[in-house]
Image (cartoon, rainbow, N blue to C red; front, side, top):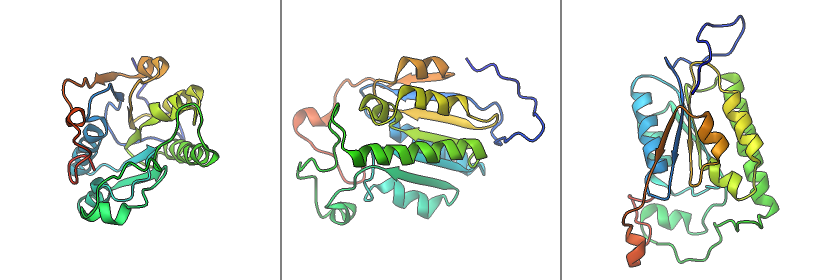
Length: 209
């Protein structure tokens, strides 16, 4: 549990979120990123600045990218991962995933470009926290970046540790490392009971992306 003092120190960087904490959304169920996006929209409704940094995601066709541009100019999403060669067609609903696998990272055998994407995401996250550039910071799929060997758990821990007072920090992803769970104030585990994928139903336009 975070017990740091809320008294300002001279010259320190601070966010504007009262009683800001660290949250974790993890588990094998659907909805981790979705929950973080909803939280971000709520914060924007109260005038807070939100920044989501997505690790291992570069899907430029996703609805959240279009939505925040239209509805919430104070909600920024930065992606650091592979895009889809069918991005334009998927964005309009004219195409579905054909299972080519080009957007996936292989666990235990990441390519140099995947490590570079993750490094860029880590650097932006560090800069965002160090400068207090947003009141709510979401590190989407950070646990996957760790578990796939793209960044170290120590790197992820260092991001949580550098969170300024007044900045809410949200971490998402499956199999969240224990060190990050320990540092969190709120942990929600999403459990899969049923999933349409089990019936051969693939990701749906406007629902999963």
